[in-house]
Image (cartoon, rainbow, N blue to C red; front, top):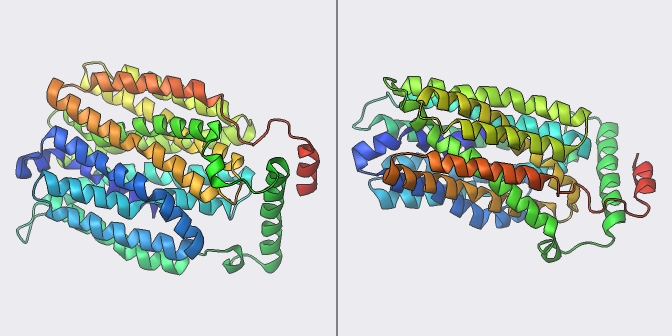
Length: 414
């Protein structure tokens, strides 16, 4: 589901030149439209995640996939700047709640020590989608027929695939542990006891139920939002503008651009899982997160060279850092939050963080149109990554560093 989700979100990065040629949508309008997705996404993310708690993952995640598939397919019929902007905004509304919904879903199924690896595998879906989206989208762009351009066929086919997956998700997703037919009754009870004990340990630290409104005043929640915003800035700047950087190498077809676009994400997918294994073995999540962000910054600074080939190599290096950082981040707030309010607060963090997906492409589009270069934006992203690396050390993945009775509670949970 995440692979289809990510492809429908970022496939617009491959058609910027086609939209300009066929519809007259310039770089600034394209950048704004790419980013407007994240405004709709941010506005509706928290309500969507709260509703998932009410209706269950099976029904709600399937509903999300169906609506985004319809809107993604409708992108084939944009005709000017305004229609492009409106549909990108609606696509954000349709997708709202999917990613934080899955992150919350993991908290209902997996013990804390297992979530880092699970999120790395899940986040690998976005990297794998980036690998697939290049060759697949490049191939679809070559389709002609029925009076439609290649980019229109691309939107229609990729949107239709998401709609098809609705049936698959309805059959395979289970909302509760008790519905897991692949677990024996004893295994179901053992897993539920572990999750209940972890929640009891958190409650022993936090005391009574912490209202969500109080958590919004928590400096740690604000720090999580800022940190994730910085991570998403870098990811989406690279996602939407990497095809443009590749085209500057010259003489490449749409399919060849797609193949080159897959390389950084293939490297990143491997790196993400390696970082997850290392952080699980030597546990200091904040240090691993900071290391990944420093790697991202170094690659971004190196990518400002005037040579398109060297810039591409540097982006490959940077992708190791910013994709690993994205998966290394989530276990920290997951461990910090009370399970009773986790869904809404995770959605809030993701909403604010994903606003980076608005600012990055919109700013890069403005710079590209008015200066002919995105070097200034790459420098700014490098600085943001370094600041985020320092901020990572101020985060906590539990609500008190040495709470009274915490060790006894943890022993009881074991």
